[in-house]
Structure formats: C-alpha cells, structure tokens
Length: 373
Image (cartoon, rainbow, N blue to C red; front, side, top):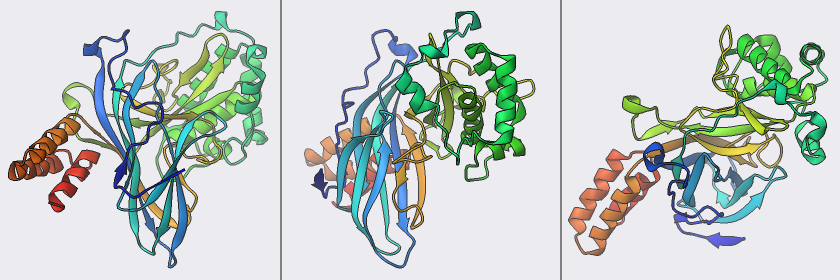
C-alpha cells in the first residue's frame, strides 16, 4: 500500500497503454472517448469517519473495448490506494480516505481513455448445445449458488416457473432463450430506487435493469445455468444525436450465461422487453457502453457494480460517468502555453476547457489551474 497526498494520482493496473485500435478493427469503425467516473461522498453523520474504504472495479481490455491511461482520482484529500482482485477475478482499486469530518465532501473516481469496437455477436443454435456437465466444476459452483437477497431460489414461485421452463426446454440453449423471453415479455421497466429480490420482481411484474437481471439469473440458476452480471456505463448516442460531454447517471446492467460450447453469452432482457419480446440483444449488447465489471454479487462490492464503500449508512453519495472527446489534448495544449510563459493565454484556454467539457476530469483540473495561478 502506498500513501499519497496529490490531487490526482496515476495508478497503473495493467491497462496504462494507449488506446489504439486493435489490428482487427479498422480505425474508422472505432469510437474513442475520454471517460471520467466520479463519486461524490459526504459524511452525513455528526462524528468523524476514519479510514473510509471505497472500492472501484477497474475496466478491462477485451475484443470489444480497449482501456488506456487509467488513473485513480481523489480530489483534495490524502488517501491510500491498493490494487486488489475479488474471488470472481474482477480487478479492483481500494481507496482509503484517512478521515472525513462531519458534513465533509470528497470526490473519488477514475479517468481513462476508451476505444470501443462494434459489440461482437454470438449466434446461438440449440442444435449445437453442449451438456451442462461440460461446464468447469469450479465455475459452476461459483455461478450457480443462491443469494437470498437477490435470487432466493427456494421461493415457491421461482421454483414453479423454473420447473416449467426446465420441463419444456431441456436443451440448455433453448432454455436460456426461453427464460430471456419470459423475463423480457413479462416485466415492465420501472426505476424507483433500490433493488428487490427476484421473487418480489416476479410478483410485481416490473423492475429496473438490475431487477430484470436478478429475475433472469434466478431462473437460469434454478435450472442449472451459470450466470453473472455485467455492469456498464451508457455512452453517447450515435450520429447526429450524439452530444458531448455526455453524463450518464443511470448506468446499465445485463447478464451473461455460460453455455457450452459458446462460453459466456450476453443476454439483455431489459433492452429486449416488450410483448412480444425481441431478441436483438441475445448474444450481444448495446453499442457505445463502457463495461466496468463482470462478476456475481459478493464482497467487497456487494450488489453494486461500479462503486462501493464500507460506510453505506454514514455516507451520502452521487455518482456519474462523464464522456468527452478532445478534452485531454486541449488541456495539454493549455499546459504547454503555461510552461512557455504565456500565462494569460493559458488561463483563457483553461477557462474554455472548464466551460466546454463541464463535469469532466480535465475541466476540473483546468479550474484548479486557474484558481492556483
């Protein structure tokens, strides 16, 4: 563990390379962005909080996305940072804030460069389905367990529906498709805050993307199909609808099912919801998302998928992802002007960055450069 007092510190987590397009991806088909994740924490108690721990899952490279210049951010407070990995193999950064006084606020998060490809597509064919016995035993044990506050596989209603689906669809691939259609066709999308367990979601007939995923995974696990969650930030829209900076406070979660011989396959019943349900996001996922985590619920993140802390009852928090393009280059040009002694021009450039890229890591840095001249 290392102790730092700087405003923003570079933490290399195996992803500090440039975000160049993969060799198989033409440059004109790749989207590049700068992403800043911020979580504002406020001590809402009457007493000081010592050694506050915040966990951040670290986005990883894949055939779909490439991460560069990853850096952990905490503004205005001494902190310690440590790299960890949970039992699902998810890389994490743990930030320790030495002390938070009553009503004191800190902003913690990370920034990175992101290159995104077109999401891959798995073409499922029930005729090619392998046997569940082909799933590695350790993986099956890890991703079919019950969590009562999420799945509650002992619930009579979950057992009844799962039993019917299993009887009608003994083929694992056909069963995963049927469970997707059941959830996408039955639930209405409602975001009301908080996450209920799968039986409650099933009875209510509505839920958020997390609750869609809870019910989908519960029915899969109750029929022997291993599942995990994928947590992501929604990026800007395509084409003329795209606006930058783009702030995402909603986020998104979907599921993956391990199906031999395909491996992990994405299913997003939330995006496919309707009557009749669609299958546009079976075997793939929405474009222009930053995938942050792939895991099941469990320590240290619990049910969360982008950030968690060890004082949830004592801290008020707000989190958002801010997507930009060109902010880093603009900041570097302003810094070059300052280094060359052109202070007035540099200040004007910093002020323009703060206004144009509002909410981003580079806007925040530019504001500080002007304030501390």
